Every structure is written in structure tokens, then in C-alpha cells.
Amino acid sequence: MIAMNKILIAFLLLSAVLAAPAKSEFRPVQNEKEVGGKLDNMAKSLQSIQSNFHQERYIHFMNTSIDSEGKFWFKKENSLRWEYTSPFKYTVIINRGIVILSDHDGNANQFQVEGNKIFEQVNNIIVAAMSGDIVNNEDFEVQLLENNDYYLVKLKPLDKEVSKVVYEMEIFFEKSSLEIAKIKMNEPSDDYTLIRYSNRKINEPIPDSVFGL
Amino acid sequence: MNRYLTLFLVFSAFILFACDTYKLIKDNNIYKKELSAPIKIEEGSNVVYKANVDLSVEKLSGLFVIFNADSLFKVSFISEMGIKFFDMTIDEEGYEFIYCMEPLDKRIILNTFANYFTALLQNPKYYKGDFYYDKKNTPVYKIKDNSNRRRYYYFEESIMNKIKTKRYLRNRFSIELFYNDKKHPEKIIFLQNIPDFKIEMNLI
Image (cartoon, rainbow over all chains, first blue to last red; front, side, top):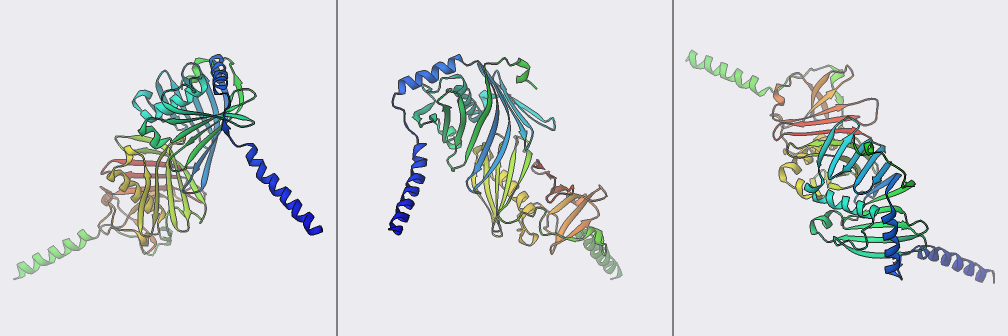
């Protein structure tokens, strides 16, 4: 009898362990039109975001991750500032079609987004994610999923050159607020970059000077 | 006959000195030390450098992640935002590029990266004759030593030897290592003249 009880307890524990990941598994969204409309409305009302971010860069062939963090600013229509503060200092600014890259030594590099296809597409994805225009974006094959906590929009670039670099983008929206919680960029080599946002401030004024050096 | 003998001696002397590509300071332990490779990484661990790469036609910045997997070195070059430029492996047998982004996928660029990281990571006894080097076919390192002066060194049978003159460094690459009481070089500058190539790496 004791042995039977042990087996039962073991079975229950195993069931609980197996059931836990199933709870967070993503499934296709039941009412795609409604959810798409909600995300669209949220994006339309969005004017600006200020946030902290944590970036995890997983390198598959080393089975290791490189972590970094910093601050992020976005202002409609197309102004972005990524400021890495740790473990290195590095700033990426995208403003009016110009990209500025700057490191802590004062080395700065400036170029047009338009001339750099991969940068252009990654920028388009991030800006599209922030400002709406995701679900109906014609540059990507779009899939809308959900679990208990998130809506997940999966974007596969249709451009072959871009898909060699970024195979798929995953954008996670919190169900409660419809705000972006994380973005994951998957590469064909099973590498990925996962960016998690925290301490978000929505629609608070950001001076234009933030998008310059 | 004497004239020929004199000519022969002068010629021999010329050959003898011409072959002496650099002079060593011998019996001076300050400038001789055992060194297996400039960067020594424990098995199963990695080192990350923030880097600026100047390929003349292309300027890139990103992170070099170097991982030691059972004496197989894995090197990844990724942008700060996460876009991958290349993955390569280096071991005693040579090197292999697992992935390389198209604009960099040119033999001259890949060879230079491979030579550079081989020189940084491999024990000198494994060096192949694949490099732009001195007449003895050994790589040359430029190192800022304790007296804060730049010195030039080369390896011979795992011994690092000082080179007295740098005039033979033209058309070769040099690697300048800056130590600052850290386990790994804090800063590394790689310079090559033909083709123009510069990598500056700072330890993270």
C-alpha cells in the first residue's frame, strides 16, 4: 500500500511538472480579428516609450549567452535610441532615416538606413512593433498566437536576404496592458537575441535632443 | 684568385647579415618568458572583447566572443545589437568558418581574421606557414611591457624573444597587447599593412 502511495505521489508530481510548461504553451489566437484590432488600437494611441532593456544574445555553437542592458527611447513616427550601459557603453540612434552609432571612446559612425537592407528591415520590425502596423505588414508572414500571459506575433521576413540573417521575429505583448514585454530575433543557426523591456513609461514627453548625440 | 676570394668573403658576409632579420637580447630574462599564447582561456569558459574593425572599405563594431571547448577555440563576431558577422573554429589542424555574413565572406578578409585569432589563441608550435611574417616565418607581437614602452617580440620554441629593431615589420602584421594586471590583455591592437586592416579590441 505504501509502495502504491509512493507511485501515486510520484505520478502526481510528474503530472504537475509536465502540466506546468503546457500552461504557458502558445496556441493560435481564437479571435484573430479582434486581437489584431486591439493591438492596432493600442499602437495607434502610442506616442512614445521610455524603458530599460535587458538583452540576451545566445550563441548556439558555444551554448553560451552574452548579456547586456541599457535604456531605450522611442518616439513616433520613427525615432529610436538604444543606449547600452553595461557591460559596455554603446549608443544606436535612428532618426529621420539616419543611423548614428557611437561608442564610449567617441567613435561615431553615421549612415542612411536606406542603404543597409538588414538594418532597414530590423528597424522596420522594431518601429512597426512599437507603432502598430504589425498584423497587416506585407513584408512578413504573420502568425498570431497566445498563452495565458501574452499575445505572440511571429514575423517571418519574406525577403530572402533578410531571412538569412533573421529567420523569425517574435514579439510578445502583455495581455493585461497590450504593451510589448519582449522581442526575440531568431537566426537560422539557432542563435537568438532576446530583448526584455522593464520600467516602461508610455506617452511621456521625450525631448528631440534624446535622438541626437 | 685573391680578388675572387675577397669577393666571395664579402658576399658571404653580406648574405650572413642579410639573413639575420633581427637581433635578440640574449641572457636577459626580462625579455624572455614562457608563453603558450597571448590569450589563455580556461576550458569551458569564454572571454568577450568589444571591438572596432577597420577593413578600409568597411568599418564594423561589435563583440568578439572567444570560447575554449576542449582545445577547440570558437570565435563569434556579433554586432552590439546582436546581428552575427561570423562564427569560426580554430584548432591544431587549422580553422573553419561555420558562418559568415555575405559582405565579409571574402577570402582575403577571412584569412586575415583566421591568422589573427590563430596567433592570439594557438600555441606557437601549431602555427602554419600561412601568415605574413618575417623571414623566419614566425609571427611578430608588439607588446607594451612593464616599463610602458612598446617592444617587439617573436616566438621561438614557445619562448617569447625580444626583437631589437622593427624595420623588418613592414608588410607583416603586428599584435600589440596591453596588460593591466588582468588575466587577459585589457586591450589588443592588430595592424596589417597589406591589405590595410586594423582591429582594436577592449576586454569586457
